Amino acid sequence: MEKIESVIFDWGGVLIEDPRPGILQYCSEAFGVPLIDYIPVHDLFLDDFHKGKIGEERFWQQIADKLGKSMPKTRPNWHEAFRSAYVPKKEMFHVASRLHDKGYITALLSNTELPAVEFFHEQGYNMFDVLVFSCVEGVMKPEREIYEITLERLGSKAGQAVFIDDRQDYIEGAEKAGINTILFENIDQVKDELVKLRVK
Figure 1: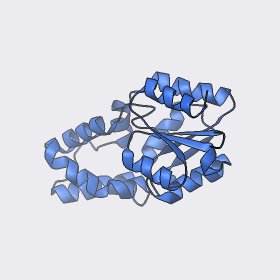
Figure 2: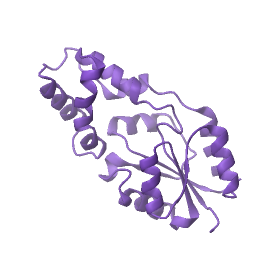
Figure 3: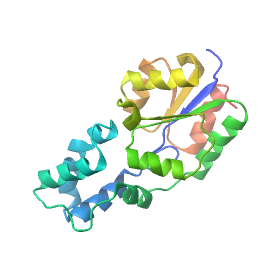
């Protein structure tokens, strides 16, 4: 096995608690629709939002049209929805910071939307050398291209990198690109897996 030089972190579910449940709750309430009815409509348009093919206004309008509703008087706001669901895992951020300080090249790789990217930059995180967001690149996990973009910006070969994510399909996408992977279960497990890869 090659020596690991780069560590790639997922955002939602790894560095922070999965924001999806909170965002879905916010959105369903904004449109006055039961959650069970809202979710499938939300997900119809989410990939295009994640890939930057549509902006926030278009996303909300498509949802309203599909639900057969007028846009709410108090317009939904993705930044507000994301903030309401944002719960950092401080110990995981500490892991990223410690690895960065030890000389590992660190990256954040996330399927996310432009308002969430703006929110990320507001947090002032400085432990990542490379930031790769699906909405900026126009491709998303588990597509091979987004992993290759990340490796190129890291300046690492696939075998020199490890990717940490909480979704099996995204892990499999990274493995197809030749990247070492850790499927996130909990913080202690991730630390143990990093040690097994001789990342200390």
